[in-house]
Length: 457
Image 1 (cartoon, rainbow, N blue to C red):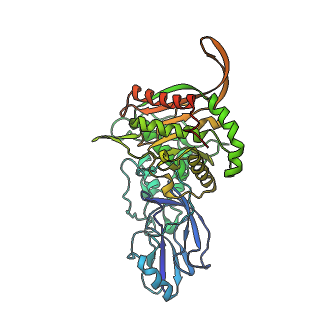
Image 2 (cartoon, rainbow, N blue to C red; image 1 turned 90 degrees about the horizontal axis):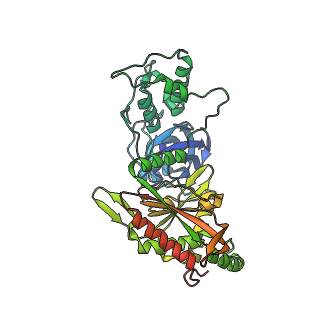
Image 3 (spheres, one colour; image 1 turned 60 degrees about the horizontal axis):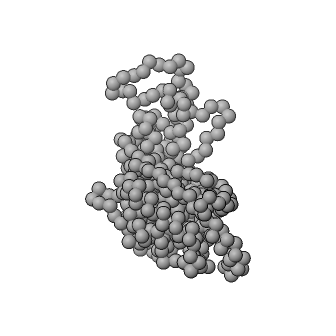
């Protein structure tokens, strides 16, 4: 019976690697075609990888927690001749690095599954290209001799980053992964052992070319008794990378306006019951603000733009990225062509995206192509925040909580009004304060005057 390799599928246009979270099968088990084999987490989605054919699990090639590149074999199936033939149209040549030893009958296993894109998913923030690790590191396909003479599998990007950051010789780190491969956990464990074994006295500083290792900084990274080390998921790492990238590349400026939302509050109160009966879900304030934002972006396209060295690109389409907090992470699904939608259409699209985000059913396309981000910090009771721009976008708007406050109106009269702060972070390369202020004033005017025909539900 022939043997085929199931490889890491490509779970999105810019996805180059993924972390194998959990195996759903064991060696020796029989699986049907398209049955889930494992769960994989990338910087954009969490998905089940399906079996490419019916057969028996011959071997598992990647350990749970390992990060592997797209196209890398992760499991081996023994299948019937007919099943192997059916799988061959999507097969790639065998013998790539990381595929392990050949089967016992001497035939190289066929590699299948690279074109498969599973459906269940949870996206991570942003939709631009993932950035690789910085600095020198062992090559992606490099193999290093271990002490016993056996070959160690290739290093994942996460492992290469750690090795380069700490100046480690990869041959010195014992590998516990498949075929003796060094995993990220192996490197972290090695660093902790080295820190624990370091002398208690602080050594004199090292100067010159060898001053790349800093014992005090390294020791500070080691956990103390009672500390809890949380694993960094692909989503959390992607958030960290993109926020650092944003603050490093985009000079942030910040602006806030106060908006009297009393008319909006009264209108929503009057229509929310009928809306919920008709639509089946609760009407929030956010769709009204999204409608105002899309109208304002039409008038002020400089906010719907991004910076390039060749010029500032003004986007024709308005695709609103919406920040959704879930499971200790921030996801940013996109309402595409938001300016073509009414308040009702925006409410439906928003409800659908939030529900699918929380259920882990977003697709890669759901997080792609955003041109401007709206952050609903008011849902947490926040009245003032300074959001970080979602690159490569030029601006992000936070809608704070609507609160009742005494306000001076009508030449000295004091009244209780429903007030909300709108805070805008902007890329100062793309625009100046005048453009940002004009945009905020348009949103403010639309909410305060509140034309019921424009915001009808």
